[in-house]
Image 1 (cartoon, one colour):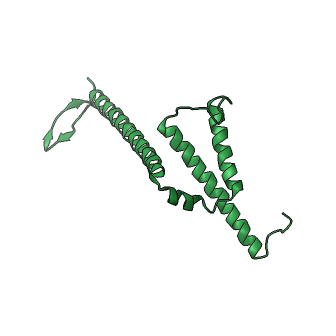
Image 2 (cartoon, one colour):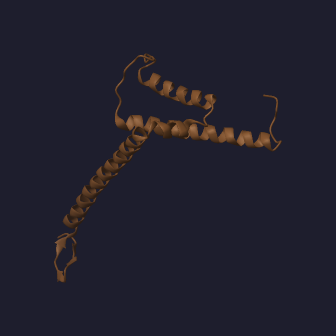
Image 3 (spheres, one colour):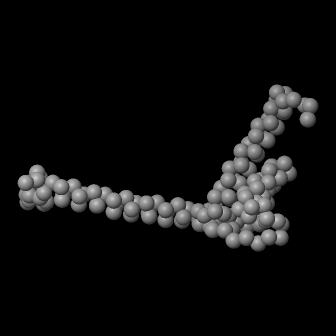
Length: 141
């Protein structure tokens, strides 16, 4: 005879086989893990959709204000990032007139990379400008 355990359920004591009870608990854990994974994926997808919707909803004036202080070098670097990623998707066959279809999550990821790269490049530019103004930068450029 297998070991028995006595779990309490709302004041009652019942005897069940340990093996069966553990098996039931394991399947419950797996079910909960699956539900958690689905919830996380849905939440991530919602966040990505929200980011794309937010960027699409920005008025043109606000977009100009956000990009107005970006130097041509930073804009060029950001464009190169997009070109490189899109070129990798089409195995180098994507040109300026090519139309391609991508998932919302892929475009959100590309958008996030571009935001991060652009932000970091702009931060480096601002830092360099401050160093020059304070006399700590090289004037050889």
